[in-house]
Structures are given as structure tokens and as C-alpha cells.
Length: 264
Image: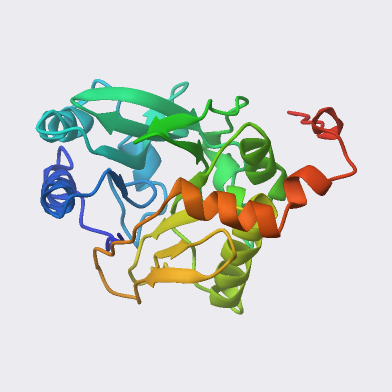
């Protein structure tokens, strides 16, 4: 799924209702997992700080509305919003909703300090890799946007048993950025021999282009630059088949403990 950047109102009501509509539609189509884009509470092309200015606690009105919709079924919905950390700053927080509860959350590790943008100016980085999330018997690893450029996170998830990686994103337009997006999505799926489900925000500043990539790096569902709900089937058997043919995880000469994470 991908979503355009919507104008902010006092409580993000329009954004929340758009999410609720997509949740209802996806559940009606029989989806077990819905991935929405990054930073859904508020966006404004003229105010890049609006997402942080409008940050809400997980108990805030925006997420409360989505949780109410989530209580209608067992579908897992994944998205990110900004959550206050200290005054004037926030975490870019991925949340997973199911049956009316927040069943997982993850503060974005890698902040987008690149291409003349500095996310860390008012966003604090997380320092914890989220545990895998079980969705319908499949293990899901949680990532957000710029995390895509760092293969270690996808690899850690895969070594812990992930079969799916999810990536809410707001991939900013720019020279070669669409090429980077498609290349990195395929690369991370191949590195980890996992499915990769990436939901991209579309709009004036972001490319959209949501995709589902299979463990062989093949795109099996894709959207363009406009809002769309895309569907794909994933299976543990496909992951097993690919890993039998391409056993990169077991062929690795580096042990898992050789992946050292340093948080500054």
C-alpha cells in the first residue's frame, strides 16, 4: 500500500480515516498483514518539521482510532508515527497493531542524514533491534525507510529466523533515487533470502512505488506514483525453496557475533 501526503488537521483525523479505510479494505480482501507508509500522522510539503511538531503518544487520538478499527479482526497493520521523546524531539516509531492492541514497536535505528536532509535534527534514533513478530506463522523483521541502506539489520533479522522484512518508507525524490530504491529492495531480499514488503509514501516529495519482493529478489507486486493498495501472497515454503537453492545464510563465513552494532 502507498499513501499520499495528506493535509494536517488538528487531530490528524483525515489521515486516520484514510488509514482506517485501507485497513477495512485490506481486511475485506482477506489480508493477514497490511504495511502502511512512514510517518502517517501528519505531513506538509511546506513544513518538513510537521511530523515532529504533531507527535503523539501511542495512547494518542490518532492511534486510538486505528486501534479501534484493528479490533474488528486479526489482521496485523504496520505503520510509523512520531512519538515524543524529549521536548521538541521525537522518535520515528514503527508500530504493529492487531486485534485492538499494539503488539510490537520499533524506534528507527538509522536516521536519514543524507542528500542534504538531516532527520536527526529533531528526531532521536532508537538503539534496539525489535524482536521478530509472528504473523500467521511467519516471522517478520521490522525496518523503516533509511534502514534499507544498511544490510546488517536485514541480515540480523534473517539470522534470527525472519522470513519477511517489512519497510514503511517515505523515499525522497532525487537523482537516481528510484534506481536506489529498486536496487536496494532486491538486494536486501537477496541478502536475507526473505520477502520484503515496502510501503512507500507518494506525493510531491516522495516516490511512492510500494513493492513486494520475493526471496529471489523478484518483484511480485508493485504500485506506481499514485495511491494504491497492492496485494501479494507469501509462503514459508517459498522461503525454504529459495534458501535450499541459495543458502547464503548458511554459507556465510562470518559468524553472527561478528556483526557489531555501535550506537553513538
